[in-house]
Image (cartoon, rainbow, N blue to C red; front, side, top):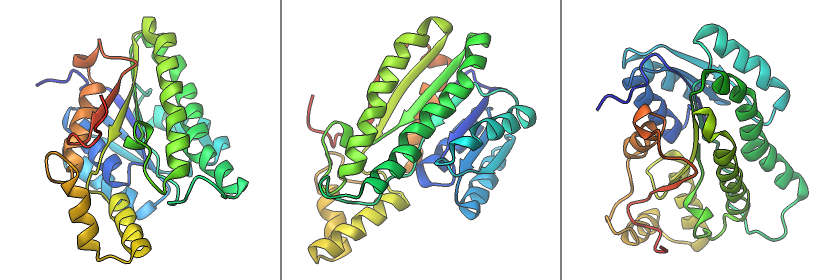
Length: 261
């Protein structure tokens, strides 16, 4: 299927991670020019190389999302190097696993700046151009924890849920400008982040890692963790011309994990 985004410019936050890297590759395969942002220079370089192997133009930017003062400069560099941003994929790393209670205010504040304020600031920076061109796609990746809170991920559950309310509100504000805004929820997708959480659970519960993975996979109707590419394909579709009538939605890519309707 031709997604209709050949020649468009995409910005993928967290592009050095498992989900972000896969999303960047999927957009590159669809013909988009891709800017990738990540704080990890080594992981970022690997993702840029993967996008370039698709034949797409790619540019990596070492970017600390908590540094809100850097937003304008980084976006300007993308505009000058690849063109104005038509597709924004808001994908940020998660905070450390913690209970909801008893966390230092500084941890909440830093996580909010990195996971929420950065997303809002970057979106606000690229929105005027999208409005002027009467075309834009904003896809925000959160977590299944916004529907069914995940134990020991108190900060993530709380902050990612705020992005759902923000995205739904934004969708109503920008729809008549030809811009869509949607949220995508990953379930247990096999990335470094999920491996980290599984290892943390294994240590916390004094269990073998294999037992934790088996228990998690057993709770998924498809009986396995998802592949990053499966998640990335959904994001790429939502970022496409073909998804022009989907906005304000929350899409689950979880293998049926979330039991609620």
